[in-house]
Amino acid sequence: MNWALSIDRKTITDVQLVEEAPRALEDGEARLAVHSFALTANNITYAAFGDAMRYWDFFPGADGRCRLPVWGFADVAESRVDGLTEGERIYGYFPAGAELIVQPGKISPGAFVDLAPHRAELPPAYNNYVRCSADPGWTADAEPAQMVLQPLFITAWLLDFFLRDPDNGFTDAPVLLTSASSKTAIALAFALKAGGGRHAIGLTSSRNRGFVDGLGLYDAIATYDAIDTLATETPAVIVDFAGDANVNRALHTHLAGKLAGNIRVGGAHWDHSAPSRDLPPPKPQFFFAPDAARTLIKAWGPEVFDQRYKAAWRKFAAAASDYFNFRNAEGGEGALRVYRALLDGQSSPRDGMTITA
Image 1 (cartoon, rainbow, N blue to C red):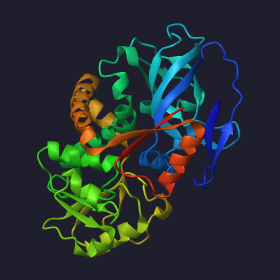
Image 2 (spheres, rainbow, N blue to C red; image 1 turned 90 degrees about the vertical axis):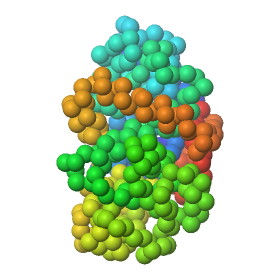
Image 3 (tube, rainbow, N blue to C red; image 1 turned 180 degrees about the vertical axis):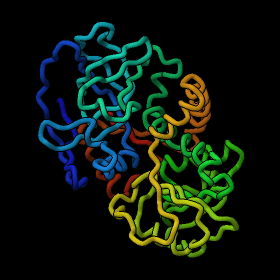
């Protein structure tokens, strides 16, 4: 069945499982049959910021609704493109569904770019597709960790450099991570520890405190109902993965005069994500990973960037089994169930969920 999750642009709880009739390919197109993809709080962030960050523009639905962007693997089911072979395994950015039709260009032995006109003005990092046979880091056994964690880890890795850049003014600030049980927060805590033990404070729910404690990555942990117990000797920088307006107001009020910055990354608490007005300073600033990547690529060159990132990723991937269990659900019904559990905050932080399409 050619299925997809169909989501209302403004009301992300309005989600339906729809069937779509496959269309014939035109010259220059390829049909990618989605094999599997990850569903995490990161995808809820894509939905919550779908308009603001143009995530909804990648995969418009024929029904006028939106398709949830996900990271995963697909096989080339049909190709009318020279240089792209049917049966190849591909890694990249897909709609949560059974297939994607692309217009491959800039084809090299290792990758291609989707040149579909509607994607031309969107961030290039999301339009690149890796040909797994040419990726020395790819193995079939490691696919779950790659699709669940790699898109999150690169954001965390870029954040680590952003926080260490003297031009940004946060080099000496303790880092306070909201939604400390989220996978991107865990990846950042891992990077901070690997980079010399930067002081990391995890903020989490009472329900997830035991899990966060057991990670061994945070120097201190507080729950949302105990924000008034937080104290720092030097001004801290918030890295906000929760995007919760109430949490932000409590932090800015309690730590007034003791905040160096507030870097907004995600929206795990999507239902409370309307920006707070008249917050005590500093004003929150949004972190967009593709912009941060472009800055480092310009400074280092693409080759050095790739080498440094992949070395860091391999270390995190090797440690992933200490923090996560990878679990799988099947088909559209499984995807719908997992998506709703993420919206409701009912998923276990230890689970790395994948969907076999």
